[in-house]
Length: 412
Ligand SMILES: Nc1ncnc2c1ncn2[C@@H]1O[C@H](COP(=O)(O)OP(=O)(O)O)[C@@H](O)[C@H]1O
Ligand SMILES: Nc1ccn([C@@H]2O[C@H](COP(=O)(O)O)[C@@H](O)[C@H]2O)c(=O)n1
Image 1 (cartoon, rainbow, N blue to C red):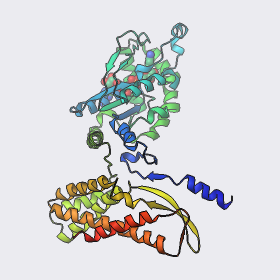
Image 2 (cartoon, protein in one colour):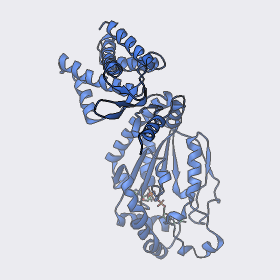
Image 3 (cartoon, helix red, strand yellow):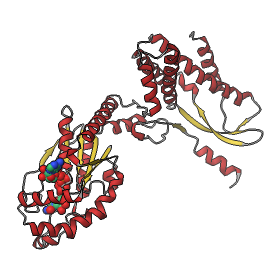
Image 4 (cartoon, rainbow, N blue to C red):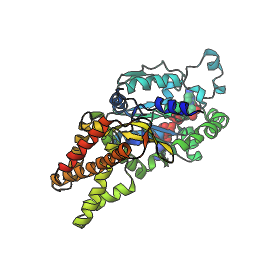
């Protein structure tokens, strides 16, 4: 490939980019300036929190869902069963119903399920059919009107099978109950509630239910975030799951109110530092040290949202690509981002009863450090013995210098 085409490629890819950091690793892909990045974020954050619950038939999925719903009493939660989306049987299929495999992925109308989810996620109510296990039809009972909610629980034996359905889920649970327990429950349920005779239940189990569990259901266990042994008997697991959902919903709600809010993923290191600065035994020196590190994380993540353009730099020895951060825009378009950072760190620091001024001063210092670094780099690139293939213009340099002065001027 010739030198010109390399240049062309760089030029073609040298638009302005935003780097993003989002909750749950959901990233907004790099977008060109002027495109509605915040609209995309809004779209994403306005959507409900979707929990998928899979597991074998009679494993206790519905029981677990009911327990979660009960404990999330102050949230708007709806349960959507995959059973509601069983295909209607044709007349011919009805005459030979015992040969029909209700445990195969093709038994479900996944397109209809996706369509219903699409509507719910966009704030529209949907009518979900109520399946009749006795007549094998989904139009015997009136459909159930489901309104858009904060949380949607999608439950079903094969709810993790289709990747498009899996992608809708923020959290995936797999109810793992022993096969003999599932069979015992199924026999009782199908004979008592569905009025089937035990011979038919056992035939269906060995012919379709067990093979489908091994071939289609069990292989989806790997997609689960949490596996719940013993289903509804496992109160500890359900309590922990509900706590986790509440935490996520808190963040989710905040993100819904503030579409430009980014939540930094918690790590053991971050949690450790939070513990230390909350501890009354922590010395002033350690407090300042760990608070500084936490503030630095916030500042660095915030600055990661500044737009940048890729530039090619030729040094005496080599040529390489670098990201030219638009420091100049710091004082103009992105002043709000910087102000937001101050406020954020101010809230963070003031939450720990330190003088808010101390917090603001520390943020200023960190921002200045960053800008000074960028400024030094800028000056080096501009005045040093290097050739810029794509120019870092005089205008940018002047802007950098102005910020430089401004930063030194701020007393702290
Ligand atoms: N922990 C449990 N102990 C006893 N019976 C249970 C338990 N969990 C569920 N069951 C019973 O087993 C049957 C199947 O449970 P369900 O929650 O409907 O499972 P699934 O939704 O996975 O088919 C129901 O009759 C239910 O009452
Ligand atoms: N007409 C039907 C439809 C489904 N089944 C069985 O139901 C099971 C799934 O429901 P769960 O509530 O237990 O998850 C599945 O194993 C089907 O075989 C049926 O028997 N008849």
